Length: 71
Image (tube, rainbow, N blue to C red; front, side, top):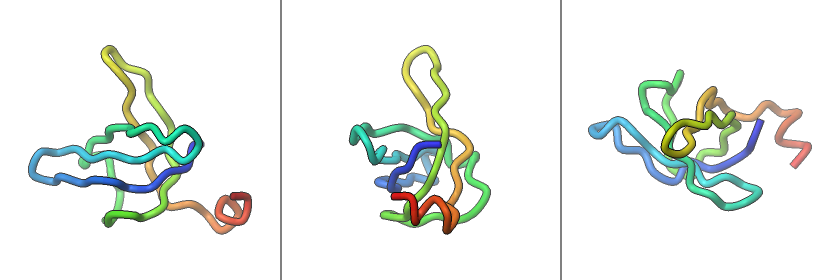
């Protein structure tokens, strides 16, 4: 799982962006995939799905206490 911060959420358009912690990449996600409400600058963990064209963040969730201590 990768770590990042919610950088943008556009519920009207149905997408948002996460800034990935290690490389600083902006990874797109679909807002319909969010299981709960998130705000800008919330820390999240996620997986990346390689698509044609590009990548998308999936399985987005809040980091557990164990994951937060590991950073």
